Length: 223
Image 1 (cartoon, helix red, strand yellow):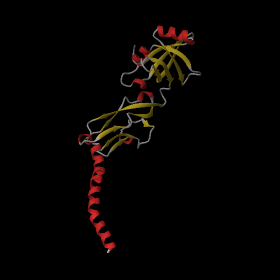
Image 2: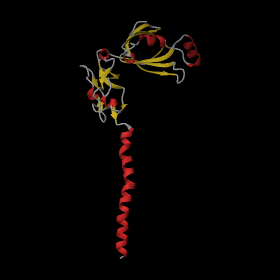
Image 3: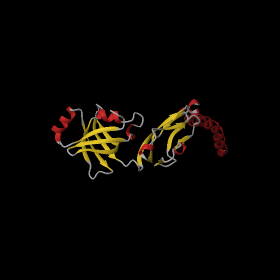
Image 4: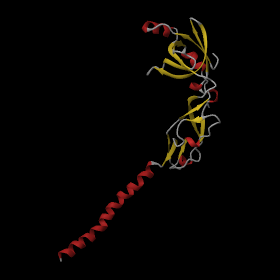
């Protein structure tokens, strides 16, 4: 199976019997809809063939040349994997959604973020918190980046990195606010708890120091 190419078949059967026969053949149901298709097309396909057709790096953002085989012959469609459902326990693919696209027009895609380097704040004892591992962008299908690399080396305790810290290639536009937080570095819990502990320690001493003054005031009132 060649990366970027996938053959599927028009699905005509319905019900449990058709689904069982499909599974016996190693196939799963799906649907293809989008640009150039008047109506959604019910299809069946091999999940193994789909996996082989996806770029191992771009994965769901792979542009697919789709051959839809049916009673009227083959229909060529340029598509992308929109969504898929899996079994909760066995992780088997149960259903696939493919969306037909126009390669010359922008599409929406979700691109993973890879954090590189070791944050100076982490070295100083801080804790890293990843808020978002991917960002949504709009661009032409062939221009979808495989990933965005974000260097966190200079990230200090109390600081954060945002979408604005990503360098986007020409033609790739973020669909989320530039202030969306990607990763933060917070102080260690011991440091956060220290002020409260100090306040709790000082309170008894302060009370003890004020006690003699209070007793003196009471004695003066009695006189």
